Length: 116
Length: 498
Image (cartoon, rainbow over all chains, first blue to last red; front, side, top):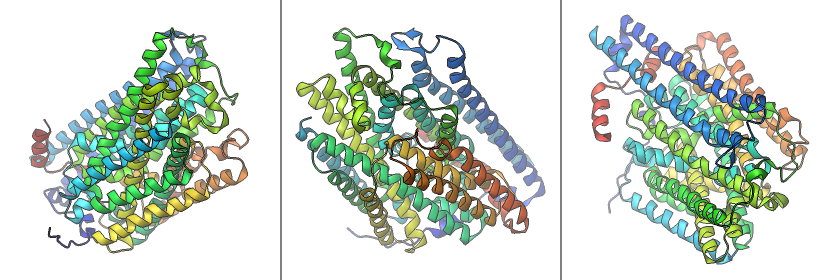
């Protein structure tokens, strides 16, 4: 078995030049880039806020509706079902929506950046 | 419990880990392989590996133990551990992958163009990693003591030895396979016994499930402040965990980093149903385990307690094996990422330096674990999340999304967060016996709700005051972080995945 001596990967941490250089260098390119960053940030904030609101609504609902937490579904108290299992589909759905829209934002950016 | 069961399970998991590790060695040849598996790991493998690495002693043992102790309040732990990944997906996953950096210190250096930031970040990463390894070793010590009757230190030492062997031999590539295997082992180890337990209980004619809300310990329920502060820590802490972040560099591009995170969310959601079920069953049928500080061993003891006989022994062996998989995978993931940071910053980044750094990263927390007592596992890991959320998380979030961040601001913010949160943790540890969350003021027991905003505020204010230090290559770096990779590469990857 021969082993090859390898060197430090520090240089890999530096950005590698690729097609994105074009977008970096022109003023028009930067307008597109900034608008992409804004729309991605807005999307992330909206999804996060929506998810947190639902997360907050769950315990509030259990606390405010009397008897709801103790109501049984298949022998398990509703409060346990809601917090122990019900939140996970909400997380998955938020993630899926985000990924779809984020990819769409990027596709729109790519169209703009390549058209110019 | 039959002591042979525990020993057999421990040996079996260690051997399986070592075999998969050595198999990985054959295809691991370059420094890239060692650090980040050359970025050629498929999303499913990678997601399983992330799940395997993330589900630590806290998730495997601690969550069920806390549910046993404090009922539905404890369910915020698995919710936070999972939702933290959602935040990671929303704010960090793709830009971090596109930054092209190997480690968190690499990222801050590239983004802020400053060696000083790199050194501070490295220091924080090493502290976080060590703090996080200690509860894993405590978990191993507890498992060995409860299941075999051997002295506690045997468990921690065994974990450190196996981790050092696999990491030193194979690096990240073999670790990826090991971690992916360990996710599925952990899931099986929890799922199979609880299904049998449910069948047995159903056959016995279940007693009333009404006792689910009965409280076996008389612990006061946690208030809204504690739950919110805990959620802040878990949601934002996941963003900065070094062993989680290093996994994102193994994706081929930003889009697949997002897809991987989506799969991880699914894997975590499925996994956390089971510790919750153990806690619920434990509350109803074995509330006695809540007494005497054995609550963290609930998952280990429940199969033997409710089924018994040889069948109970076999199920117990499975659970013990799963528990060791949890300690091994989280510890090795942390050791790999710490070794990456230490070897690049101190030892020049060679493979030999990486191996040496791996030994150091594993043995130092072993010393800590001998000197400290085991807290409730889920709680002590929760505090590490608070520390990450107050240090690395603001630097990452502001670095990715805010053009105004400067190196001075990042350093000031990380130091503030680290000092405030670290101070609260130390004060909390000194001021009272381990578990007495009730005796401790709430703001000290769960500091994240005020330390995280403070770190953000200091980072923003100092950056504002040092505007002149905004790096000159900012435009280039921000473009790189946020624009999609060359379309060709994305499409090719897309067809490979399908």
